[in-house]
Amino acid sequence: MPRPPMNHPAQNYGADPSGLIYGFVFDAEGAGTPTGSDEALQWLQNPPTEPGGFVWLHFNLSHTASSKWLKDNLQLSDLFHESLTDGSRSTRVELDDDMLVAVVNDVSYDFAFEPSDISTLWLSVGPRLVVSARLQPLRSIDRLRDAVRRGEKVMTPVALLVHLMHDQGDVLINIVRNTTARVDEIEDSLLAGRLEPKRANLGALRRLLVRLQRLLAPEPAALFRLLRKPPEWIGEEDIGDLRQSTEEFNVALSDMAALQERIKLLQEEIAGRVAEANNRSLFVLTIVTVLALPINIIAGLLGMNVGGIPLAEHPHGFWWIVALIVSFTAVAAFIALRKPRD
Image (cartoon, rainbow, N blue to C red; front, side, top):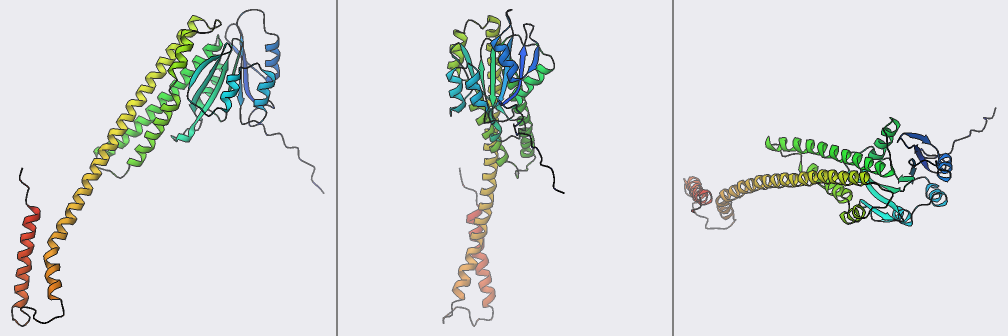
């Protein structure tokens, strides 16, 4: 009996057909309600008359329909669309067409202390609409989503951006703490005299921190321009919160730079100890070679198959040769092992 055909659901990569992973509509009190792409478009076309409230839409750029849907249905700045394909991934917040365009680097959800686990999140922040997009799951944006689902109040679009930067700073601090714990373990092994581990591990951690610092450090010029001349729809409180989150983020980056310097000093200490051990081994090998030099020379001379070899017929010739070898070896040992004068 033939099997009935199976209807396979479309693979949307955790998103709806438009590429939307999740969305929220925030009321004037800051409470977020889950919404879909169609409902969000209806809200944007007919926003409430009372002030306050906005929509947050989060998209998966791995979905083939997301970029086209964003261009066809939402009025976003050209800078945002260009940043999606731009090769520059440095963290920045810029103002374009009265909208904030943010490029934020974050670690992936299954972060395993690998430089490849760092990915980018793009945001467009306007007075009524916040759009975020990413290629792979990221920790900070998922923490923000969970906070909204738990009922945390977000009053304005900029407050959402500030919350995201706070979450990113917390993730960065956790990375610094975990890296510090690993460095402490390596340092304890070094102090205990166990050198086996750990230069390769230190090198990988240092490369990770350098990449994180290069990508996560916000561009100061763009932030300075934004904070000096913000758009009219951003309140003073939001500007102060954004400035504070930037300062806290810079503190975390300073801690990361200090940790890099500590790793560098540990690498130099391990390299010095390894060089000292190699020099000691080379010294021992040199001493053995010098002490074996007399017996090798004399054995080579006496082993030549020619006539006239001295003491060949003498009854005590062997012992005379042994005494000669011992004498030369003692002289060589004295020369090799004597302490040099200051």
